[in-house]
Image (cartoon, rainbow, N blue to C red; front, side):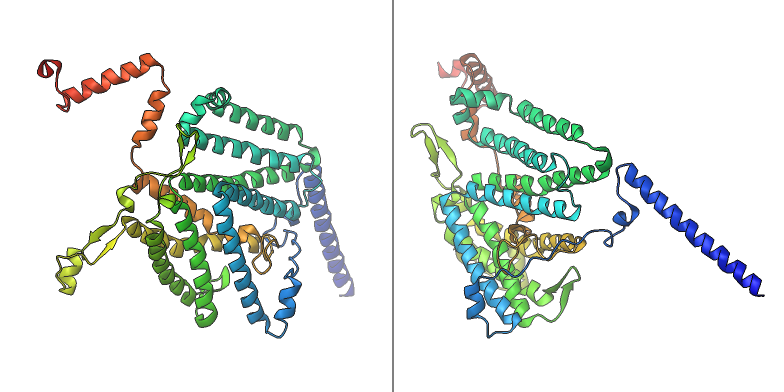
Length: 452
């Protein structure tokens, strides 16, 4: 019996040692191939933790709020710095919104790329930090070049260097990207193949999320400042009011990804944002500076924001819809109140900011939980990084751009005329004769016999 037990124990020990040997051989084989071990590929447990940002609240605020509990201290810190951020935000808008978006996109890219470096310990990879910023430069050159060519065609055609860059813009952009692609392939090192491709994918997804959305925000801005300020302000308002309602009345958890988010905050933020959007739109719709698109004036040789406001920004009288009249029994043939049509559109914008906008924040929360970090960075005390404040803005930017293209933007006669004037005289005559024949055929112009 003793010999049997001894034999079984010996066999178990040999099996255990064999499995360990196989495991170590597998890990060695993966490492020899330039990859990562199985332990590094396991969900969550294999992802190295990024150190949580330390408390960098200004010492002045720490001393002033030292007698408060951590909950109320956080409330005051967030509130004070939120007001400071909003003031700084509108000051930068006054100086130039394009500068703001360039700074924001570069900083957001830096924060996400830094997380990738820290998580995958990729600081030692050859040329990869340089290549990441090179790809950012290439993508920005492509998108901003497309925007300038589209919106300021006359200016581009007037200057010889700009005309050449515009004509071959896509070819130049592709050449720049292809150069970076070849540099990446040449930088591949045998021991780091998998890690290098991880970071290559990380960089491109970051570019897709950050730079593309920033480009859409610039497009919205050129349609009129109001399409830039109102959506961004609605997201800011929803974030603040959802936090306020959740702080004072929150009881019911909303989503597991963000345990502090509550249904009370979500609903309170929705109604507050809709009301805020309607009021802000009413104020801004009365100023040409906010509603006119950015255009280049050939006479003054400068960019101008002056136009005759479209019907979207002219007061109109509205009555109660017939469906609601039949339901409520309140029949009226007079105007209820004069409104700008844009205020009706602002309801859609503010509703999206309240209902779908937070999902950008939930996505960011899931991302941070996946890599075991609290914030993207510690740029803003009490708030985290710039990406923590703009996680909802990017979804909003895409929606506004799609909304304008689907329901607002139509053919722009000014742009068509600018492009026609840039053609050769023979091309202009050909278009003139074609348009004249078309209008005559439709009966909008008299024929030569009738004119005689």
